Length: 110
Image (cartoon, rainbow, N blue to C red; front, side, top):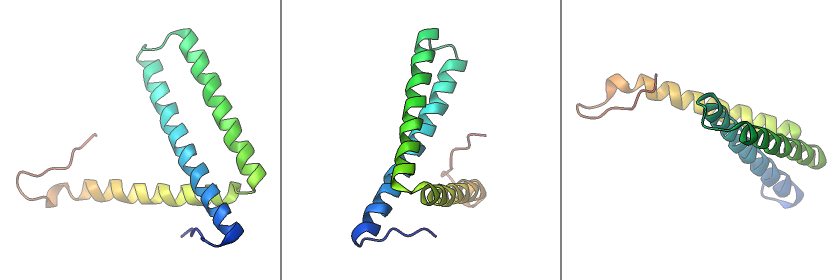
């Protein structure tokens, strides 16, 4: 498991890793939402172009920060661990559907 040290320069690196990872996750969510809106016809061609340019700029800046700070590998490790946690939560929630007391349910988006 990735740890974030709270001592000196290691604290700075750990914090940068965490911040960049969270920003990457937010950009991923924004991309999924943009695709959803584009596929549903909610965006004009101009909006699609502008959104694509903005997302590309964000991704380039994230990559620049990772290179500049030397945290590319640690961001990748943290994202992998977070993906595993999310997968476990999703699979655990789906497995709990039959174990809930009467009147309680977990939404199923399948």
